Amino acid sequence: MKRKSPLIAAIDIGTNSVHLVVADVNNRQNLNIILREKEMVRLGSGATDMKHLSNDAMARAVATLLHFSQIARAEGALVRAVATSAVREALNHHTFIEMVKQEAGIDVEIISGLEEARLIYIGAIHSIPVYDKTVLLIDIGGGSTETVIGLKGDILISDSHKLGAIRLTKRFFPNSTITNNEIQQCREYIIGEWAPALKHCMEHDFSEVVGTSGTIMNLVAMVLTMNGEKVPENFNGITVSSADLLKTISKIIKSQTLKSREKLPGMDTARADIITAGSLIIEQFILQLNIKKITISSYALREGIVFDTAEKMESASEPKRLSHLRQDSVQHLCNLYMVNIEHAEHIKKIARRLFDVLQPLHKYGFIELEYLDAAAMLHDVGYHVSRDQHHKHSYYLIKNSPLPGFTNDEAEIIANIARYHRKSHPKKKHLEFAELSPERQKLVRVLSSMLRIAEGIDRRQLGNVEDIECKLENYVLKVKLIPVPNAELPDIELWGAERRKPLMEETFVIKVQFELGE
Image 1 (cartoon, helix red, strand yellow):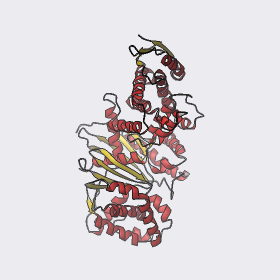
Image 2: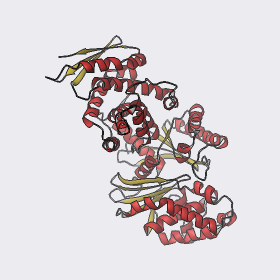
Image 3: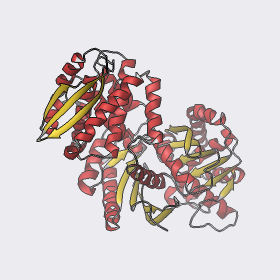
Image 4: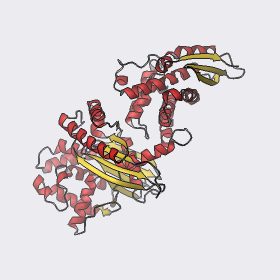
């Protein structure tokens, strides 16, 4: 079958384990898996928020990632690595990401819980025939549990909760022997924390329930073993009844010592210390939502990364526009914060003109243009908080709002670009900018320089400048402002553009000249 995508190495840096899958996508949207690797590193550890990655845990993870990067590069694969709850919550995550970059040569993306849920859903719908069905999906990780309801590739609702197998084990089961009181406390906590999200799920008429992750796969292996059935290498497509799952969970709960749990038929001994917490999550999922059966998908986050990466690479060769999901995410924030859409679209058009004419110098492509588009549309969301210092408020709202389709790192880039559409230039003394890698700092400077000028050209938000004509010759960028016919002279817009050009001149080492057209 003809390959549609290049070989992609997807790395999932989880709280419990680091996974690698090397695969490509063929022209029938099937995954051709070359190899899989998994290493249990227990990167995250915490009873509530996992605020700190220990030196030992980081060293284990970096060593694993170095090994995985060597495997991927030996295969000639493009590497994409994402990190989930343990890394996104850690206050020292910048240290870890820099270590990975320096020692393994991998750029790690930190993704939000909602983006994690989306990618898991993408993986699952490519592994079992549920694309045309309203499916409820659950994935239990070490630090968090994601639930999604989706139909035909679109997310209807999604949720990410800090109810992971490791997190709950640390909080409620600190000793190898578990008491009935601890089990009850854990149950009550899960119910209390999860109730709003599960209530939201109950409001949708889902027809299929799909489970992914090591916890549920281990439970399925135990169900099959206890029923005298053969345990397959691949669990994909296996359906188990909730009654059988609850019987198995009951046996786990009654096995209150670590040694007794390790001896249970079908138990993965490497998971025996955290299986009780994971089982209680599944138990409440079944009971609270009246689930009758669960079908297993062997594809989850890492496979979703492969499909998502292949799709983005394919989109890059299409006409330059935001993908459907990203565009919807940006439009949702525009609506939520009552953005002046006409002004935002005008700014986007002018900024794109500058991006295109300067492309021989910056050499960025479709993905970077997506960031500029998003920042142009969202640069004024800060007005929702206050007109004064609204550029800083825009940064905060973009960074901290859900943006499905964008990773945390991408949202951070977009937020920084929007933040510098006015006032100060990017500076190393600005903490949010300083925490970006040198490559991303350069990207923010380049794209915000375009956004600044575009904003200056529509300073009064009157649309008096209909368009611009740009020409780059001998490191001089000539920009002609085309007024709207019969509109007032855009002298204020010309003045605004002149005031905003120094960042572009500094960044590109060029001269920028403006003139009024007819």
